[in-house]
Image (cartoon, rainbow, N blue to C red; front, top):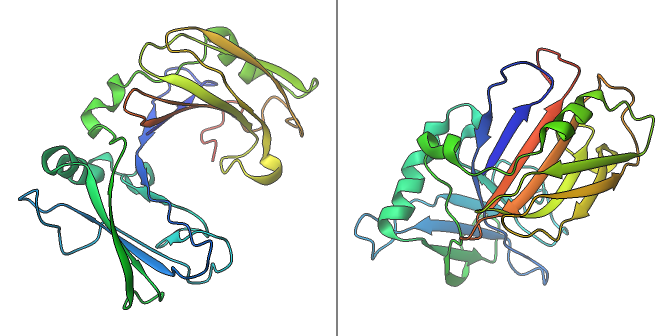
Length: 247
């Protein structure tokens, strides 16, 4: 689950997204499609319609299947239509809480999913909360000094120090400084693992390459951690010079 919050405007409204990751490898080249199913309402059988379908159509040779409708290599099933309607994912989340967290994964030898190779049952490690509870999630939070520094940071130095508050529920795992929303390639200016300890405030000195072109350009610090149920929790803090939109 992910929080995105502007730090360069007054009274910003947070946005939230939730997703599940189904990462299906294809290292030996025999698996070309997969379907993921939830339990049915009885909790013992399986729904006939998959909640996720993955294939290697147009994405062969990358070593993992791709979520249907996503860019090559993506394993993420969005529960919120990329934030447009947070209620869209609530029914699926309800089903995990009421029917159990197991999923059935069918693996196929062809992209059309007609020749089944194997069926595997796995447990989903962490399930996001329903939309109404997202505001009360114990998100990892940058301290006020770091938020202000992010707004003012113009790239004149390659060094940026990020500090965040202690969190009794979520342990920080890594931190990323991004120069664009997709945060890939050259726009991922810095990424560092964090030896976080639950409940303790911490900080990290980041060395950026490249650096922002100026204070008004897009800048984002993404703090990633895991809660006690191993649910991934990402807090993204964004600045872009006070523009109407940072997209």
